[in-house]
Length: 498
Picture (cartoon, helix red, strand yellow):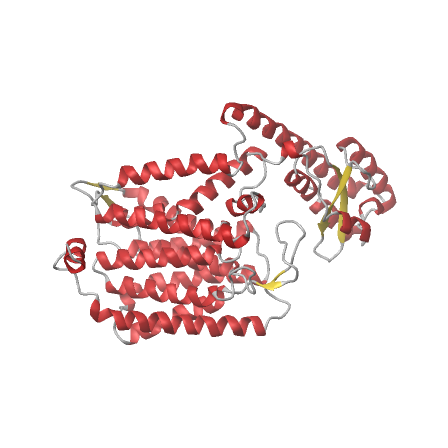
């Protein structure tokens, strides 16, 4: 069988020929790439005080502040290309207007957060609001038809929660993995190309072209985002990529077969979904907010295992490409490959949990979970003390009086007043630029436990600054504390945990 015969077997004789679109696709891709490339250069050259991602001596280990407004040139390239497509009649505003408008709104939610932190709750409300707008404009999942045979299910009132879940979950999944140079942008590139292929076999050239357009925009940005990154994607870029994938995937299928496009995207998102599942489970067991950041994502674990950033990125790219091909194979084989895809994802999850150290030993998993729950109770105990201390601020007449109370409470909790060979100083930056320090026992939990315990006192010290304009002398960081905070000697037996 030659290539032409194979192509006909895959696409069918009635499929629109791809040849007339080749030059147009290349034109959109190159134009988006150049606009994104030049826009990224402009953002890097014009960087000011806003939109900078400063190192925090915890997760963010880059040497100097780096702009995190990389989503802006991607958005600009996408919108310029869309305007051209509308002018040339390649897409209709009446069909695509809601999707384009809501993509702009979702980007705005993240972009404003990049300029000034909005908080997780505000961003979530904004995301749900954008998803509701798109739903109200007619873009929704109403019927789940079997794409591989007969039968369908009318969702009824379930249409709303399912559509909202799809439109809100994917942007957050993309944002959650955006913790390594080139990772989220690269995944967005592969997913856009996957959508382009789905658009082609679904006989929707406008989906094919807009997906190629996004792929070009991401390619231009990635020139400056590969390790070591000179610019970051930011929440605006991550939300835009995720919402683009989610919304266009709903458009990329014929009516009634939306489940097929969604299934392809879910499988292609196997690595981010797995990473998100690990993060939710890990943070739930530890008793920390699900949207809190940590340094225990899959890419962090690969680096701890000795991978360079480049090798870790290549490994994750490779898995994403393989899963994208697996997802596409389900469509091409009319569902025959679905059990294989399910088995691949299950084995990937099991192997990753063990290899990456999330599970130290399957036989001792219960003991490991009990240890994590014990640390959770310890954290809850410390948070309770921090809350009581906030009330003590109101009762104390002076900072000196409160400092005495704080010293007694710290002694009860286990924090020390100064550095000793058995403690490690953990720095807590304040909004005003001041820095607090708490001396945590090295043998009492993991590095992440120390950070979570110190974070419990963030509001407390902010209240001190509001009332007295100063911090307790036992919590003021000095140069020695900042120097020692960079040297962490972990207990080797406690380096892995759920």
